[in-house]
Length: 60
Image 1 (cartoon, one colour):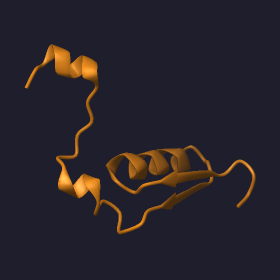
Image 2 (spheres, one colour):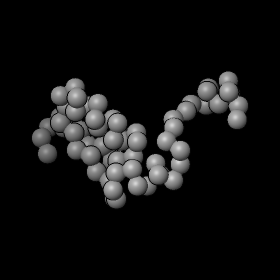
Image 3 (cartoon, helix red, strand yellow):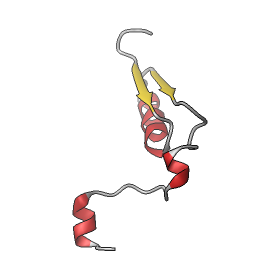
Image 4 (cartoon, one colour):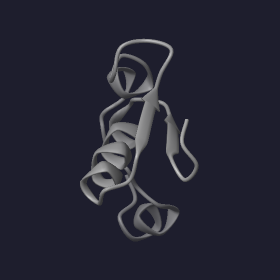
């Protein structure tokens, strides 16, 4: 692997998006996962990202 290349571990919604956007900015990216992209935790949960601040403002 070349110096300066980036390895993203996990091809879920966050890892795949990160790899996509880094590659779009010209970075050398390797995306690895134990299974198929999106087949792990992303498939088991609704694909959403939130922060504790959002949860305090909008309680479930």
